[in-house]
Amino acid sequence: MTQQDGFSFSDLTPDLLLDALDSIGVRAESGLLPLNSYENRVYQFSAEDGARYVAKFYRPHRWSCEQIQEEHDFTQELLEQDIPVAAPITFEGQTLHHFQEHRFALFPSLGGRQFEVDNFDQLEWVGRYLGRIHRVGQRQTFKHRPTIGLTEYLHQPRQILENADFIPEHLKTVFFADLDMLIRELEQHWYSDWQPLRLHGDCHPGNILWRDGPLFVDLDDARNGPAVQDLWMLLNGERHDQLAQLDTVLEAYGEFADFNHKELQLIEPLRGLRMVHYMAWLAKRWEDPAFPRAFPWFADAKYWEGQVLAFKEQLAALNEPPLQLMPQW
Image: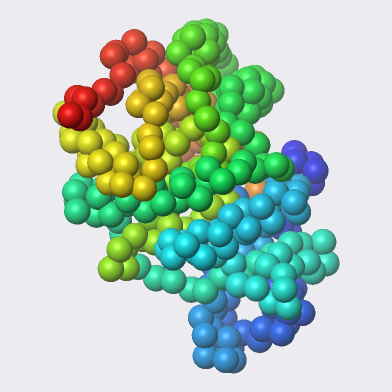
């Protein structure tokens, strides 16, 4: 992997971090506590002004400056509509800052409890706010950020996996045969007649904190796509559990935005896309020392054996009837 592929954090020393913060007039009083982030480097600290901040240093070459700025502008739009979202702080009219080839942003440190996915009161709140987020997202689409599609989530990842050395030799034939079968099935089930809008993009429960209501964090994967992309990762459990959760979320969502129920047929295809994309993401980032430490099982043959089984399970899920709510009268 080359620096152009996105890994060049080796020079991000404590002194450089402090100098970068000092360049925008922020002086850290405490140490810089690394937070659980792999794509970027994120640190929490207290400043001389008594405030607590989170500094995010963006992975080089992953996003362009225009793409990062679109994310920042979207979060500012949401904040202006009183939607609880972690938005970057503006310093001298700028939210994106530069220091010695690095780009970074500063956020307020916002704590909270874990969002409880099996709490229907909390699900209702989240559904309501997602409707509000999407109502803002419908105003326009991102010009620089990508749109969810098969190339980025299936075809490019397949090429990355083929060129990687992680898959044990004795599994390669069956792994790629089953992966290609899954890709063909996903292509068949992909429904493209949806209206793209700006999304959170990675709205899993770990990106929602609870502070007397939901707080949406980490819009680093914001992109254009179907509304259901921000909904399906909230669903868990057996089919009847998911139907009850979906009913709760969509009823609250519908108070603020219309939802095209045809998009429900995208839930399992989107799950399959995420599965393939995730494997390739780990392979692509493996030379970053943070990844082998955090995901040691990725280099284990048992993981790849499990993925072959996961392909078969996802193929079966794709051929089940999609989740569908009863009509409301």
